[in-house]
Length: 200
Image (tube, rainbow, N blue to C red; front, side, top):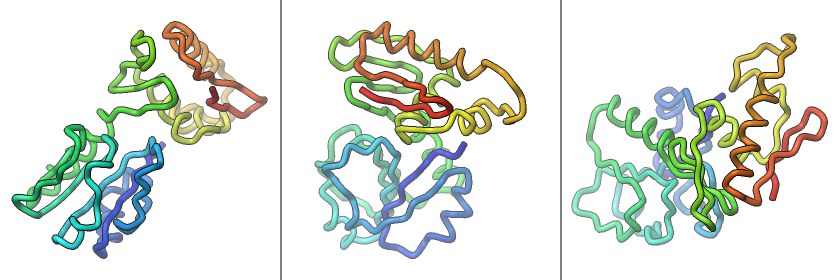
């Protein structure tokens, strides 16, 4: 299953990035389209190529799910310490690796929980536990989508063909629910027939 990645840029680089970042589901927007008030759980790439671009951004309002890629030197981004910055020029492999690391290691917050790497934390009481890689993928996907058919998770995360009858997904969901209960979060995963919902 492809991770979603928002790309904010005023450059005409769409076709190049589609080829270069084909493992992601890309959404392209202009720099003016950044919604600073929206609590976005998706990952965002910000491409800055001139000083006009810099003037359009309120760096102090960017959350840690933004990666800035810039070829501009000596810029004071006036951002919080969590925003990641990649200075170019650099090799294509370096950019690709930086984006992959950014996606894999970024923190996601949803109501009272935070997920960073494989650590699941209740932000209110600071209790935490660790997720397996599969549990992490399932939980990240549900947080991002809010609802999904079980079939999609089976086929795209667990790599189980739809005609195979297995309780594998139910086992993973049961373990995720136990971990959510263990840290006493308000976040719940509910099943309604073949549909899964993440709620509070």
